[in-house]
Length: 252
Image (cartoon, rainbow, N blue to C red; front, top):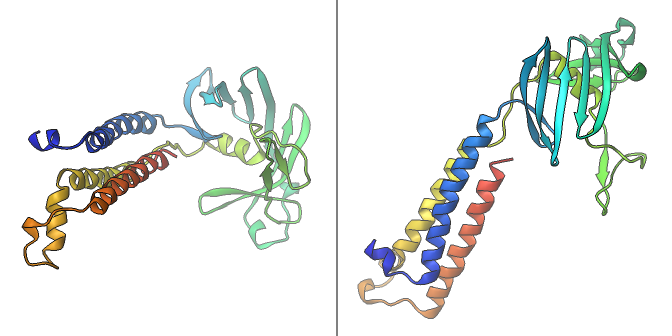
């Protein structure tokens, strides 16, 4: 405690900030990792069963989100807007004999409120579902975000980023793998660097003289220059910013 009291105001502030971030982000990581469910639109929708259907609930962009998943039907509600219902069924005639990926694929037809939505085949590659078109080629959707935030596809059509696609519907019907946000290893690594930064603040003079001991004969009587002191402040500030970014990135 005596060592802390001898510090200037700014190093004390940085130490307090490092402590607050360690405790605060630890609590946040504990909360987000406990929410296990279906990852959708940068949110985790937590499942529960009710009346023979599975409900995935959460919040997306500030609006209440709910997937209702039955045996072969999926409905999605976001705020006051409803998508679907989507009905999926196997269709052997939708399987193509072309393309290497088509081998072992399953023909699928999906209807949106009774209207055609998707017809093709689906295969599993490295644990992920891949949709194939009628010619056996993988279906890849290209999107771009304009300066005003509008998302468009490769043809320039506006894309509703919240609307579920065929892959999302099929994953829900098959039972998605539970996921959660937050990665404890990233938190622990960042916490280690946070502790190292705190040590460099508390023992700055000792570390300075230790470094000099390999270059000068009497490092105990050396005094840090103004440039050395300024470099310390700049370095501590930079490291604190990096640590904040590390905690934040681990939550994604």
